[in-house]
Image (cartoon, rainbow, N blue to C red):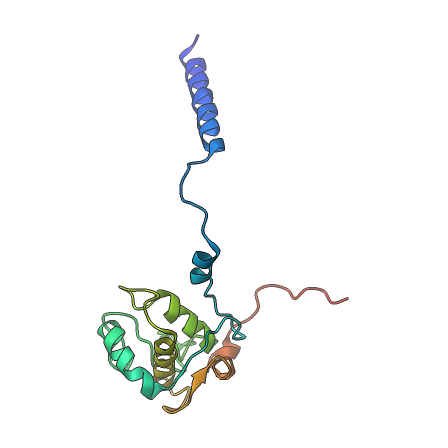
Length: 178
């Protein structure tokens, strides 16, 4: 048997063995109980579906923001060492765009969702829903999107009009209407 034929036979045997091993599965994890799944089913959509009960204003959110966010994002969202959250309005079409919540994000509900599931960086999903509403309100207020006493809740948050909402285009064709 030539060396080439031998290597092909070894490779075929290895691939067959790997396929058999994968077919059985890696035996990782365990099925989740319904209650465990519910803890992770926290998606919030642009139209507000999925927003939890709770309410807060920017004034209510100052303390939570300063405790959990200011170290990375600055006391007024100016950034350093983390990304800036405020400012940048009108800069997206320039040579030096500044992408912040106020200049870039199209929906306030998406901000709520992001904060809720991934902030603070060192303890994601640790804020209460009221703290998330408050931090969301504070960040929106620092961008001049809402007033400091505007109450955000599951009803009002989807109605917040972000400055760059019209700055996005649909990359997919709309389905044909019958």
